[in-house]
Length: 207
Length: 207
View 1 (tube, rainbow over the protein chains, first blue to last red):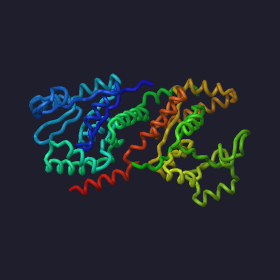
View 2 (tube, rainbow over the protein chains, first blue to last red; view 1 turned 180 degrees about the vertical axis):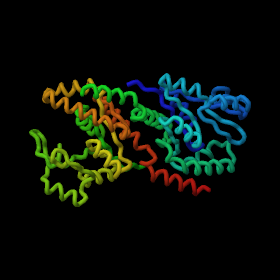
View 3 (cartoon, helix red, strand yellow; view 1 turned 90 degrees about the vertical axis):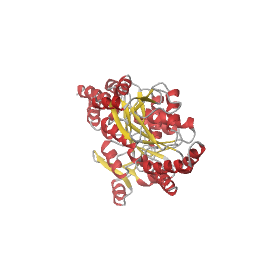
View 4 (cartoon, one colour; view 1 turned 135 degrees about the vertical axis):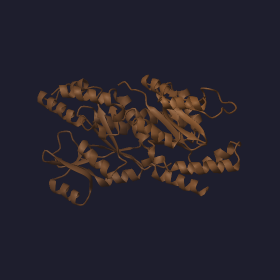
């Protein structure tokens, strides 16, 4: 049974550890490809072109939109963020499972365009733990932490739209758990239409 | 995160190896309970009360129906077949994943009553392999084999109603695959309503 790749959307609370999880997943298994978003926002110190984001100007981004070069895009705080189409489609064709990190609105747009996309929602084991992690970063003001917790509360409303929740308690276990969920998804009927169709034709031929 | 058990419905082509798979699964992992059906058909040589089936007469079966003592039931060739409710509910409550073997009509009835039931469809790697296995049994006439293949062709129409297909190529791999699919199912939002609700309440409290 040959599989085409699955498009995997990862959302979750800020502070739940999405970034680390995804990096570890790609590192631990060789069937994943990480999609890098394109943005018009300025790079922050330490960010690298093509690693955190592809940094472009407004004009270049809007040209991408016009040419249908993005799988989805959105605007936040006057900046564009989007997923370049070419990389995603090439990797899926190769049989790689392609991972995108994206918030809920984008996730729902993706699901509309790619009905077999797998939507994962990363959560800490408890809200108290989320608060602790945000505080533990030591880089955020109390006000920013409060904002993120309120944002988490909003995002939590949308969890039922996701296929699976991923509880990030211990990192290593969570990575392996995430891998299992994605592997399981490869066995849904909607992701095996060709195999099922062939089986039907073969059975039909016995009649 | 404490889980209640999941009700798992296993269907699939006759000759795909459902029975062996389920036995091996229950043997290899200790979180499963195998539901035993009740029937009015006579025991075949080698069949044991409470292992293959609970054998009852028509009157006893109809009493079970009247008392809502069955999760589902159906009639084939003048015999009743059904799933006793008490065992299923007790095991689920204990946190066990309960496995039933049932054909598609029953599977759909179960899904209606238990929306979080997990539906698995067992298939051989190819139709040619199915034919080979049916012939290899050496116990069936050509006519019976033909009938089973035609029945498989009918059943194949319903595969899209299942959550996952399970390809039984190598038994051991397939058992472990089946276990992974069931474990994955424990992480769907609909099977974690309580956990998600608690998270929401906790986050709300931070506001």
